[in-house]
Image 1 (tube, rainbow, N blue to C red):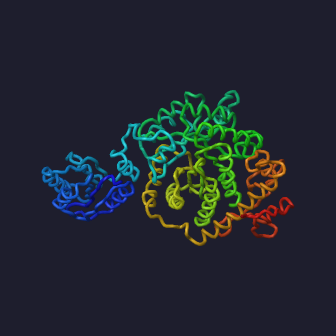
Image 2: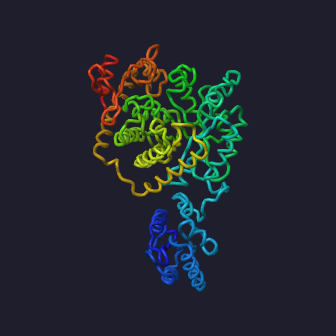
Image 3: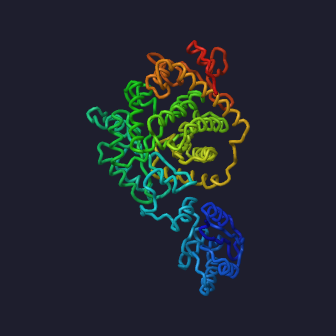
Length: 553
């Protein structure tokens, strides 16, 4: 059923119609009938159409000299007094024109060019523009806010400075800017590891990697600082010790929007904690199950940990599937699948996209009515230059690439990350850069997914990753009922090098012998003796001495 008609036009001598046409397009998507009158439409024609068609709203645009616009709108005000039908009047123009027209007090809603697509969508759905410091206009949980802003992706950004007070004031500044939907609170390593064991903290490491938070009240104050502007959701790193206890604190203090936890990391493997790998995987699984039981969304930020350590693309694709498989097996209903582009940073854009498309296809094969999957994309940290001007261009470029997969959430990476942690100013500017790209790409992005080279590489990775997944299942089928969700099987895969990465320290209990090279924009497993790439069948046969018959289906 139609929500009513919206008439749109540029008035007077203004021929700029792009804003009007775009707004009418959004209105059609939201269930309105629309009528576009065209450019440079005189006031009398507008009023005749209002009387004839009796629209719910009339949207007029003017982008030229403010004084000329004022004369035209004064004519409109005078002549509209005799209308028998009274629509809602909308105006759109440049900021100087909008300021002049606002003084006349005629229009119900004015767009001044600083508004974004999501503001227009909110208005078309609710009849109101988002209002600063009005919590009722902003959904209080992730799934509701995703629905509220669809098809515009939510923006998430990491924020946490070494100074608690600067972090506190920065959160309020970011919230008041209304450009960010989710503040991803970055806590320091002392907080992640020793929140419940203060006697073990190293004071010299306070603030290393994020904000130091020493008690539950510290988390509460940070959350309270975010309750203004557009009331961004808040989430936080998982702990690297006492993970369930910290999860309970985060849920009770910051209303943790979702849990993000790696499956195989934050332990002896990467030095972020001293837990044995098999113990840490079991604890990660308990943490996942805890959030699933309490209907809290979960993200396993696992695949990019392998990519950041130069594992070949096949392992990143396989681990995307295995991560989601674990979440589903452990009772998660709403799963956030993160796809980090640009890792390794020498991947070509086309081959990078192919890798992510393969990850999506495998991961979303698990989706059903009880397991909903949301796509979250982000730039890779190693991709951004230490020259901030260059990094801004890279941030825009990778965001345009990410828009090819229609993300539900974009994890914005601050352009300053190669130099220093993002300040509030950097967070806000980075989000505005990304918003600019989204605005241009949301309706009618170039379809790079149909590039035959991308399709061929995606198919190749699906075959290779499926072979690796099947190999793991076959290798451990005699000792495990469900190898892909078995902590002992997964940790043994890493120790033996079935799952491996060049950055894993060789020797001791970890194989750490995988070599990779980037060739033709792809990250490939590499045989340094033969000087060539090897497929998964050859790599695993050489590693284990076994020829598994089960191939990619």
